[in-house]
Length: 296
Image (cartoon, rainbow, N blue to C red; front, side, top):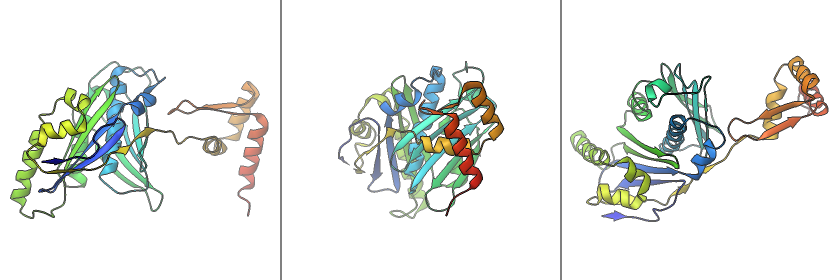
């Protein structure tokens, strides 16, 4: 039996747990937030879809821990994509970018991201940042994340991603620490059963079916507890103040040369496209304050 609450809505993350087993799951949907992330970037379709997976993965990873801040999922490689990064805050704000020199032409994960590392950073408002690193080994982001959990958490975990031009849907299934059942054999049987059923879900079903129908399709014979969904939204953390601080640590001579050549400095945010213009007077004051240091 499935005890469901509200299981509809896009741009959301929704948790479910098995009442009689130490296993939990999460379903993530990103439509508007995905479109806002890739809008105006002119990414090839393969890059946009992979970035969608990274966005959903950052949300799924954030659901595995309790934190107050942001989680950043970043891949650096020698493949056609030099950098791919997605982040999700603890309040459900997402953003992401992809960087490359030549426009990627491949649709294969191993060509887009090759010979590199996958880095997961948890930047909390309290305490030191945590960082986990795993090699980019595997034919998909799901396989790379599976390897990360094998090395770090030692908890059985599966990721499922499906993308199209309009958005991304993803599901996580994860074994929990032993509470209901201590017997390793029983735990293994539960995990094998639930993960095998999850693998029967098609991409179209994950993308098109409401969460309640997905869970009924997979686990109608099980007793589930389904939680209220959490809203997700694209939001960039850039601001004029942050941009000014970034400018203040640059070489003043380079800034002066830009002012002489262009009459000022224009900075465009890679994530959201916001433009910040700084004139000669504002830049002079900015560097003057930097040289003087903080006042008391």
